[in-house]
Figure (cartoon, helix red, strand yellow):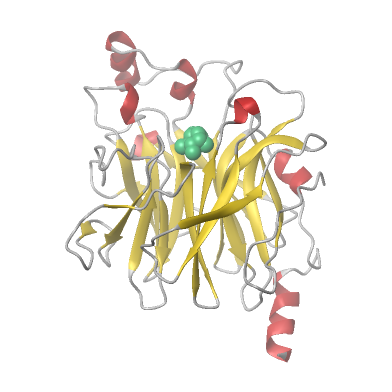
Length: 337
Ligand code: FUB
């Protein structure tokens, strides 16, 4: 017990057990944050969520080709890299610009979205979506994997093509979430457009391998699922989480299901994060952090600041996530600071 308390104090030296949504919002427009504890620091890997009003960057040659032959949402062309942020205490953050950059992903040109990261055998693997497969037909798109020796990158594309480059079971190949179970098995959850799949990854994280029943992609879509899957395990119970609803009508939020298996079935239990008209609109596409060695949990997510109207005007936020004595997740109270 002494060791746990001591290490917990070491991990949060400046903040006690505090956190700061305001400091995350000050970092700028970012969405889909994935939080981790790597190499003695907290890390967040988000999507750059530049609003359409921002000045257009110079286009690279592949983008020029894309613009000539295809209809692409112009703001997606801004999203050609992913930044990361590190912190000793969940309060003070350091930006690491372009840990994944279009120049290191030969098959990708735009719409770099929603990363998920895992450390395996001393290397860091970052899965990401690019090229928004639903909007194009000539160029490859889907979920790719990039590798680095450091959580700060640079991450270099590992395959020269997407790992998952087409729809399976109706699931748009976006929004990956990689999860290693206690026995070392690596599960991969992903999917947009209202469908979610689980797959198994090889130990080198470069291929999808058959699951116990021989299938490669098993659909696990719970009721109301839209996108943004995430998996945690607490006291032997699997908590599958996702985003549902729509930010436009303030119904976007995070819901969850519990199961005794990482592949479900997942029966929706309820929503734990939703719009608070006094704080922010449309909170969602979250991830969850367990402070190592403790039963203290945080939810990191994006939300639309009050008064904003743009789809991409999304900022990151962090709040405590707590469990009731029966193991259910209690409603998250969004905080401003
Ligand atoms: O940020 C780009 C996309 O918007 C993500 O892939 C979705 O989950 C939604 O947050």
